[in-house]
Length: 393
View 1 (cartoon, helix red, strand yellow):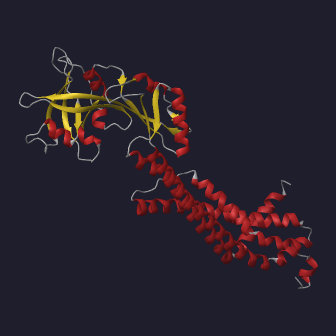
View 2 (view 1 turned 60 degrees about the vertical axis):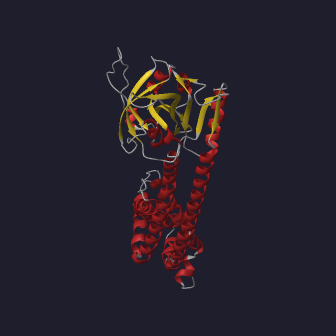
View 3 (view 1 turned 90 degrees about the vertical axis):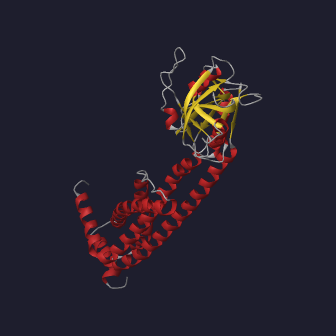
């Protein structure tokens, strides 16, 4: 058996090289099918990451808040709740952002006090200027460092109504909650207008907001972002509700369901297109293999006449088809991944990231298509050597 393997593959190589023109056509069909399949599958895999990134810009899809809270600043959660939230769920990374709302006043020697909603934030998705702002307490009324705060355009007009609203680098803002000892300062930077609630807020590092409100270790709510389908998000919400019965855990259904529906439609369309491409490729290969089968009757008759078993003869032709599928899949899949990068940039404005998992899947699918397209070669199993030599087959 070991001695027959080199001869087997030598015959396969001879079969491939026997009619190069027709086999080049088969390779082109397989390569083109593999390229389109790889491009579509890569876009399908990349679509999940792209949609998740786009929907993340709209904010979290799960909120953990205190139960029966009258206002955003009247009830709190313990900060230890963050340690109990899973870091991943079904292979997806869970992102959390801590939020504390504080009703404060901005005081200035030249202006009357102005009410402003202070939002302390920490965790994932926090602006870098806030996340990287060192927080150091002041001693004897003197700050060793003044933290940075971001203020919305409408809040800034209230805090600095006379000529300061157009400035992107505002002056130092002093905040207080009415208690003389509860006073904080920050170097303000005006946010561009967004049309959302951020326009009326002043955003601080969470420790500064906790110090201002005299509520160390307390949170108003926890915002959670979990990428994935609506069913996965709903399962995660149910698990959190069991873990935190004292808290109000709910999903933001608009974002969760919209993301899931859009991805399902895109995924379904791309999957259907891939199926059509594979079927058409199989039909093209099958048509070419029909002609190959007619041309190889004499070869099969000779093989059988010298003692070749029917199964061994068919294995030769199936090995030939699988080899063509392997070559076409390797070349086509590489071209398809490059094509998907260009398509992503042309359609979505951002180049798709090549996913290596797509490569072996496409090569395997191409081999299956090549073997399925070689179905006409099964007709050679019924060839009789005597009929071939008499010219009757």
